[in-house]
Length: 198
Ligand SMILES: C[S@@+](CC[C@H](N)C(=O)[O-])C[C@H]1O[C@@H](n2cnc3c(N)ncnc32)[C@H](O)[C@@H]1O
Image (cartoon, rainbow, N blue to C red; front, side, top):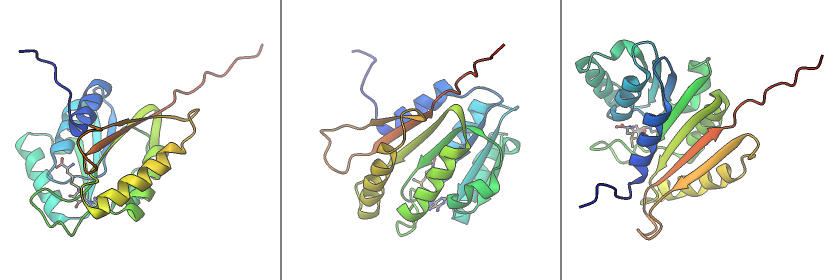
């Protein structure tokens, strides 16, 4: 049996960050949830790096805190019980990567889900905070009404980004039906080197 199989949206986002991030980097988890992404980011940025993580639910912050304590990485992260629409108020340094895993908290209250109104503000702030070559990974789940709307609006917004500023990639199984998860990977263009005039 071959080892290679086509991978899900969520896997692609994680794999991209695993290849991209380096020890000492700064990263943001805009939707902390149960802390899986925050933990992975903490592992990737190492002891000399830092992760800023956001969620509006105390339950998510507590779960993530527990996870990081157990793995000895709590000192690598700032956990904010705060909406990601306030990202730029809390993080005032440029970062190498930002992760969004939209939707509701797994095993939590499905009424508390990300909403386009606040997601839009957060994604715009995240793109501003990215360093040149920095990456923003966004997983979106259109299998429910709010998620479908979020996906549609996100797609519209990302299509309008200037290619001189960002490259935008979308990954999904196109034959898996209309509710299939999608992953958007956005990379800021490298800074153009200034031509030095004698
Ligand atoms: C799909 S879960 C995230 C899963 C998480 N990344 C993990 O690894 O377990 C989405 C999370 O977004 C959170 N959320 C909803 N609205 C938010 C907002 N405005 N700002 C930050 N987090 C929000 C929810 O509370 C939920 O925990």
